[in-house]
Figure 1: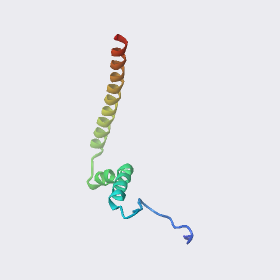
Figure 2: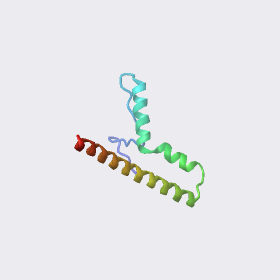
Figure 3: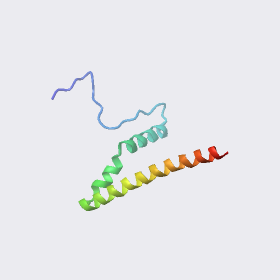
Figure 4: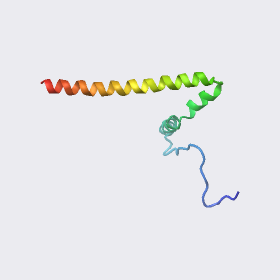
Length: 86
């Protein structure tokens, strides 16, 4: 495999530290890590999880998403009803 000296590939996550502002760069890096889900994946791989438990967690997460969606829709309906009554 040949590498171009003109173009170096940057692999993984990286953040530039500008004007010596390390704290800002660290915050940006942490945000990128969270968005990519690296830590979440690491925690999942730490220990073996039975397939039945994986399914149960997925089902529970799906139900939570559904209930959240319903609650959001109901909240919108309630505010609309209150505005109509006035």
